[in-house]
Image 1 (cartoon, rainbow, N blue to C red):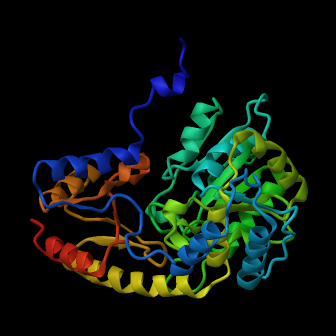
Image 2: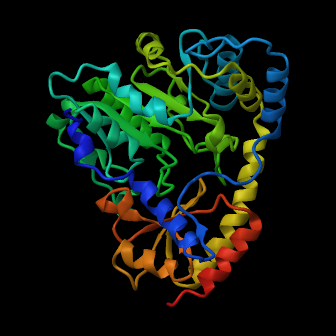
Length: 384
């Protein structure tokens, strides 16, 4: 048998490596706190469970779900988009349900013809699925350099004009994983102007957009007149529903969505109806993400203060539940990693997301309040 060559060139999923390290340290008898995975441990939005229970109780037979989501779910997402971003989207032609965001992100490359050498572009520090999708489908993938000086977003002006025609998908993730960087409305406007001029699709991964501590971050949904964007949303972080696997694709471009709706049935991605019922409850309520954000704000403050007392330089932190930081005494991410392991705190080195992450490290704080206080105590004991 001849396997996909991409699999032969790769080891385990990069983020799993450090999660597995934490598990190994626990197996060795250490009291480890795993701060690598953005999987909230606090309560899931309670009304989602109530809707789930009611749906199951009333369901006497099990049948295939709609691949694009049933009408009440798509209507609920449409209403949410209008309430929060003042955009009118047709539930029937401009919205599609997904199983969380990861499967949708991975499958989007199937939408296009890549026979003329077009490329997928993404920031050099990115969610690994953008690159693994391109690799498994044998599509050229271009990493766009980022740095603290560029706000950890690609410098659009630094890309030669004649290169833009090679782009077919441009991934933007704001608020950004791993750095928490936020793309301004002006940045998104410039990117969409380039997309319209050079005919590529801006895929905006916005799964952290509803966890924020100041003004609502700009969204690609704020540009209803453009036909060159696709928005990917998820309940995983917004509603603490990672295990439900429920998200959505949204676009004002009905032709684009028509092609997506033609593509997805063959993938077998219909979300179970009882999960869709739970999702409706979550999309219908705008208050619980605000409540979760207030709780995260308190947790971040506890950990941020402990880090700053030890001389760490923290970038951003206005949204998501990640802290991205460096220290003037350490030049590599591995050095930072070892520093924290000595206190049995397992973080993710910046290089797990790309070489432009060298010298940085990412910490999640979607933990309990008590655990955040313990994390702060361990940070205070770091050997610096």
